[in-house]
Length: 263
Image: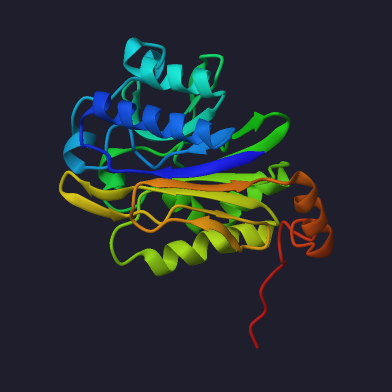
């Protein structure tokens, strides 16, 4: 299955502009035969304190017309799109991933479980992990800081995921950690990681991109710098099985290590 991590500049607080960019990247992905496209964290609203504090789309209104251009692009290209946004669920504000399928269905099945920095002042955490199934292939969902915690990707792998889709936004100075975290999540779980990073200026902040697709041993199959574009790779379920048979960390996982002894 052909997958891509896309990145572009997001305009703080401008839903229409960001939906149009997402639709454009979806059309580009379709031209390259991509079946699943991952776009960055908070891409639809922009990752910006001002945008986060203002009006946000409501999870119950994802079927409204504002997302129609992205639905049309997903349908035209037969692409499943996973894209980050801030949204509200009633009184709660969340950082979420929206999944748009070619049949027009649009859901927000996952809310970020680990919040970082300014997010802790604005949002509340999600209470469950989520995987999506595309053409029989199970893929775990993840938003940025989630991927810094080994147990998050591990939970997806233990539940049967062969890929880990991360919508992210890394600030300048974070490239070293970014490139270690997601390669490590791939290696330790014998799974593909599709990492999509926000790039360029957004409101008062700036971001460094670095979108990539990692193979089950943590090697980058494709990687971007800070330019707009797509990092494209292929998920091979048989390679995941072979890698996990050779490197058995997922199988050898232990729920606990007993009482620690100090001598």
